[in-house]
Image (tube, rainbow, N blue to C red; front, side, top):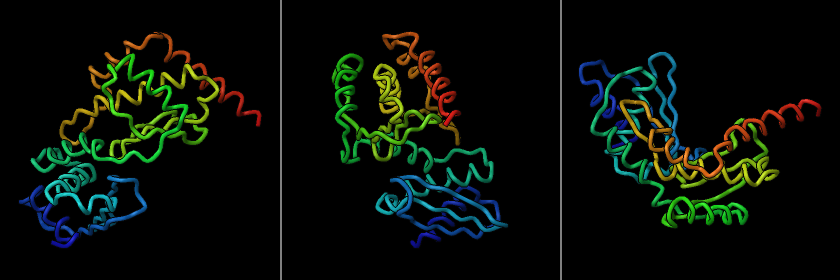
Length: 218
């Protein structure tokens, strides 16, 4: 089955009573592993998937295509293929290779793993990103990678807290319902509230406000 045929099949399985649409599917090496996007011009729909998807079962690929179509066309539906995709995405981190480990983040991870995860969490890739304030930390499921803003090197206690928050994303993954994926579940929030410094979030907010005021003068 060609990529375009796969996309058409995904649409017809999702909308069997609707007219066929012009849909193209391309794989791209410009995305991070397992990322994707979808766009529409007129009646033509263009889907781009990370090249990492090429080696994945077509049933799972149909799931991500249907998920993207539901988001674009505002279709309120959940299919078995979409369930397969969500399950695959939750567990894909187990297959991701470890390719990058920042020594500072590694030391903090080992402390957090012992204190909060019983030493049972596998270490993800740990990297320092740019000096961003909009996004201080991010966990990418497809590559099992935690990225932390370099700005937090100025305050290791806040760095530790943000790393803990991102490790909770690795632990809890997400809950999916329809086309919605919830990342901050009740279980996630309960673990977040167990952090030893109950004022960590407020300190982090104050840190960001202070940095933004400082940057305005440069």
